[in-house]
Image (cartoon, rainbow, N blue to C red; front, side, top):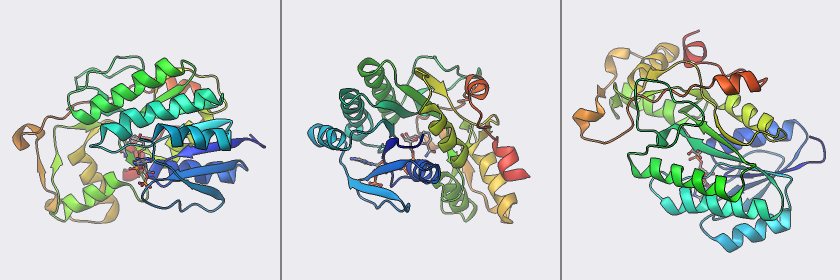
Length: 273
Ligand SMILES: NC(=O)c1ccc[n+]([C@@H]2O[C@H](COP(=O)([O-])OP(=O)(O)OC[C@H]3O[C@@H](n4cnc5c(N)ncnc54)[C@H](OP(=O)(O)O)[C@@H]3O)[C@@H](O)[C@H]2O)c1
């Protein structure tokens, strides 16, 4: 990948920063965007960008002319960032002929007992899931050659998901026992994304860990790993809390496991060993 310019949109975010770290270490030129925070990775050329502003997205890509774009930005409660922003990035990337890897989410599924395959159509039940589904539709229509990575809870050093578990162990937050996910380590996910960049993979790909756990079980794993008292863990159910959220969402990542050199470690291996 020497001589390649990679644009990481959302380099100030958790996954974006790790993608930047690994790409810089591999000797790539990396331009990374931020919006309200800062890009904290050495060797990245930082640029401010608001993805809701279509013309500035086009202007940045026309100026940088990246070979590839990794698109991570989202705001949980802002459709214009998550859906419109994804469309703007895809349009601008296509305009300059850049390879696009777009980050999607398991949150666009409603939840069921059977695992979700890569090409299963979205069945969103909340606004965030609907925005991620709309983003996928826009990206695929604009650039059928793009890779769209559906992932699950991102764990690892600095993870918001792990912090939520710590908060629940301290009684400051509550974890659902009826919300199953397949967490993935940020290092594995970033490596998988960077493997997809020079590949010709087009379309949807599940990239998540092999171990389905509830958020409450994740909290117990964090307790054991960190030597915290599991008895302090506050739990409830989404049903009891009266919130509509996808319940059991298991991503079947066997296609990615067969395609990629990166091993997608499960959360049992990551936290219980
Ligand atoms: N975290 C998870 O557990 C999880 C699970 C499933 C899927 N995903 C998906 O994985 C991707 C990365 O997640 P993450 O946890 O790394 O996210 P994150 O840490 O919250 O980072 C989000 C990024 O989006 C940027 N952003 C927000 N509003 C923007 C705007 N108007 N214009 C440009 N950039 C903007 C943020 O910039 P500033 O911080 O500078 O404002 C930040 O760099 C997302 O697409 C998400 O949907 C995440």
